[in-house]
Length: 498
Image (cartoon, rainbow, N blue to C red; front, top):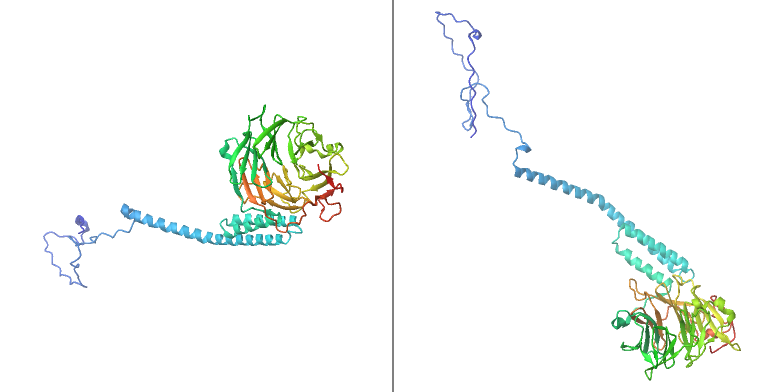
């Protein structure tokens, strides 16, 4: 029920406002009542408002207009939340409508870049044999296109698939072989915290592996079952001689020969399991590299530029200067990256050349009979980088193995220095990092890799389209097919034993 207070009636008008004057004492004639005109209707009974005194201005109060301020706090919250939700949805729809076209556009562009990269890779395949440098350039362009595709849409599956194909094609250009059977043969971490392997020698039968540890000054032997035991360590004695720190290690027909920092030659007889020691004649100093053949010991790196030869069983005698003195200055053998012997003597230079040396018939001193340039093959990539280990195997073994700073094992033909293949770790693995030596089991066709504390092994596989080589072909005369543009034949006379 609504109510209101009726207004106070207005006072009657003053006398001067009446229509006609009033005469006192004069009887006023009554007027006739005016007849009602029109219709008179009463207010509906359901109207709660009524005119208490009559007159104008007594209608119901005017309806109030809607106003946000007149709403309750709760209703205001509902309204504001609804408005915010509506605006949020509108913004999201706007972003999706704008970015949706951009996302589709980025994916389309990424796919286009991947297609272009794949076309570069296919073109590179056509250049592998005749223009490997051109193939590498195309593959580099393909990688650039793939990098641009990642900027457009990094999660596009085709990008990684094409990148893998590009990597495999580059491996084909560079003759890279990733040994799938590579495994840890030995882990010497349990021999002590300071193990630092630096040299490995495998027996002719492949049943024994000898390891030199310059970190803990010890020599170990390991059998095919992986059992490792030290057979010589610092302080061990033979007669009145005590073993110091190992400097070099080479094979002997009956076992092993180790040189220590006191210029003692330690000979190991495998069958008797005994060591004998004798002072090394001439007391050579320097960063020695050693090789052996039929029990004879050969040393370089003595600071004289010579190769010193010690006859088997007489290491205490004064050594023979094996190289022709007129060649010493130019050969610079003291800075050889690698030194090995198989009946011929080989020295590897830091520039990637291999000198093959022998004593031509009728000559008392050794000379260079052939020089290989290992860097000339365009398929070798990356370029040979600071080579530091050389392994040539036995006389009839047809291959040369080289380690360099690119964390790989390179295989060449011994007959002409032709590049065959290179072995590397699988992408992301580190087995070939920091290698100290490589040993080859010729009888069982296995390759052993030595790092500071572990020995890895894998089977030697033939490279696709590898060149044919003839065992012992290093003695062929000049002009014989297969000498190759990277070979310089210096002497055609058959060599004698070194």
